[in-house]
Image 1 (cartoon, one colour):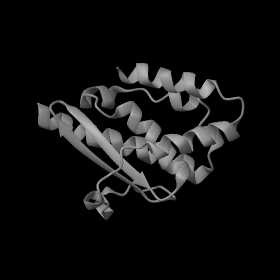
Image 2 (image 1 turned 180 degrees about the horizontal axis):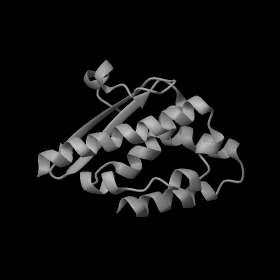
Image 3 (image 1 turned 30 degrees about the vertical axis):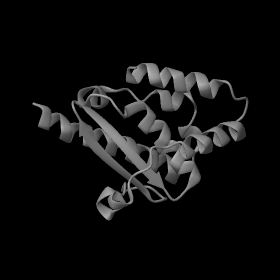
Image 4 (image 1 turned 180 degrees about the vertical axis):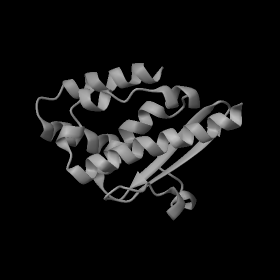
Length: 140
């Protein structure tokens, strides 16, 4: 599936819920299914800067696709990174770099987060794209 197809799937899933309480619960459930980072990668260098909670992300190039794993010490944040990883994991670095993240606004996530969590969301997206840039240079 392309990143856009996955994002559209996420938009459809979030549209099934009537209120944000249900959506938060869904995000918590998504966080429980997050591909967890191996403990050896839970290091300071893998912490995303700018997040209120601790969020660790590890990226690995397999063939020409990046696989992301992550974890967080906060359940909502774990759900947020799960949504992003679902969009970007197992994708080509170039596709991640060029990916649009408007789906975040379409599901209403940014407007329902505290300012510090919204900043953390931006930091998460930035970090995933930075990994993609680094791996893209290796593929050339």
